[in-house]
Length: 397
Image 1 (cartoon, helix red, strand yellow):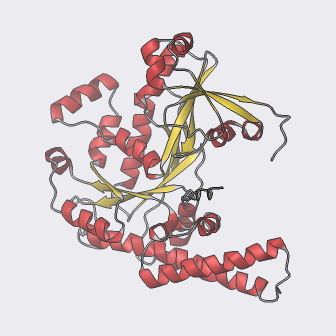
Image 2 (cartoon, helix red, strand yellow):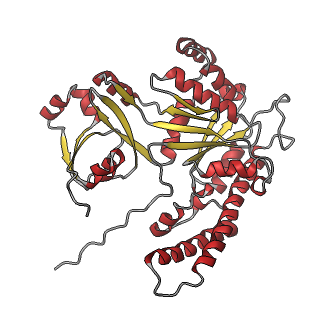
Image 3 (cartoon, one colour):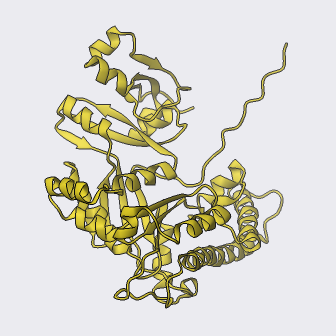
């Protein structure tokens, strides 16, 4: 018999985002974080016809803009519309020494541990009326400060965590329980991550971790394991002319320290002003200044940074977007709706959005031979419209 082909292990990703995706807005004081937060909050209310929920003054839920979702709602005219959401959290400004408790450091660094990703707002505008906490404008120095404070907080957490695990595993022998063996493994990985943070000065997310290590790291909720999108806050003049002397230096810093991370220039004051206008006036103002709001791209980038997408379920009762990781297979996608769907998975009946839009109805899609029945190995694609068949009496394997 020919030898079996080696099955390549799928690389696990850091983080365990769900349908309640949280993004924290981080930066020094007076860099435009709260103005950005207010803009993204107001724009979500004015621009979208979806339910909007303010959780508290520093936490709001915004719908992820998607023309496909809008079309499906027009097509099915459902009683309920549930788009994909981002929960945006405005975290109070961090200062140098925050990891050691300076300012409101400890309280707000703990808030960052609870999010799935980070919008790091960097100030690149001069304004004598808006003081800079470090005295003078220097975005590269500011990037170093925040980067270091978040890394130091992870180091502090891991030092305590390793010390606790050391104490609880010191007396364990070779024939310990499965739970105790797991604690030993967690100690080994935690110590390795701590050494990486202390020795390299880099974020956890930039390390090369095995799948087993990723599984353990994901239970630790480390701040520097989270993806970061850099939002560079420009003056309105610089944003409109698409030119600022600090942008090349910020890009060079990202390339050196966090290669591949996304950089998005924006203007918080302009975005906030636009967000307060009625849709027609907003459209007119954007034509007048010669540029459009970047907020939709920023919201969508929160999903793409986490390598997330979504599939749709649709009908007269409800059109809904369900969040999944890129590469998720049909049973995993079914489990996002309900664990019974994954446990008793039989098949996924799949339509492509483009096929439904082209042919106009499910019946027509079937008639064109485009309606597919897929099994357990089907990798769900962003924008798929899926109906799952399952049997809850199926025993868990």
